[in-house]
Length: 202
Image 1: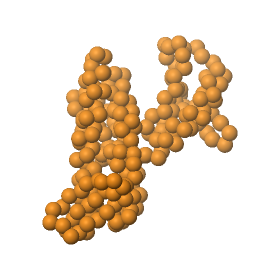
Image 2: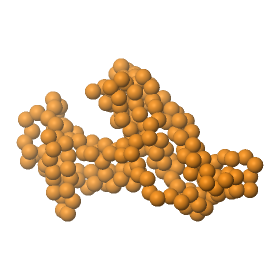
Image 3: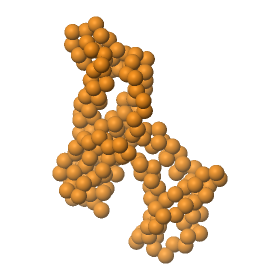
Image 4: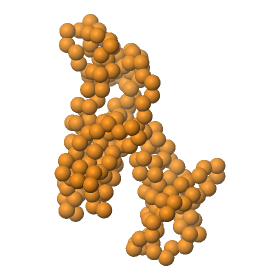
């Protein structure tokens, strides 16, 4: 059930469900949705009182995920432009006097060695995708191992561009992760993977 709580000038919209549990649980998802699970028979006054106490934390979490939300700002792909990788900002450095086309990050820079400037965007996207494949698998494997004791094992993890979501879980047991997630901190990537693993258990 959809509910709204006014906290100062902010409105906190949340999805409320009643379940067989002893305490109230509040979760802020990577898509900034707020889920509240309340014990059966809880009064709305008591629920809203607890949510109001947690409101500063809820808003902080929503702002945190907003800062890494998938979006496509206008990019020019020129030297000096900043790009995210694993939660940190790096300046783009275009090098055209090169024999080998490649991308690497060193210090403050993501260096793009390329012969034709018109290919900078595609080369950088390919680099992000390659990094996503490596990091998502590396971060997911130990998390999947922890979920095996609950008989939760995804069939596979796939990388799929999504306009508004970090990840999703298919009915066939596949976990889909947005390659844009490689721009977020490792902790955020792990959070999304755990979130999708929990869907498999539901």
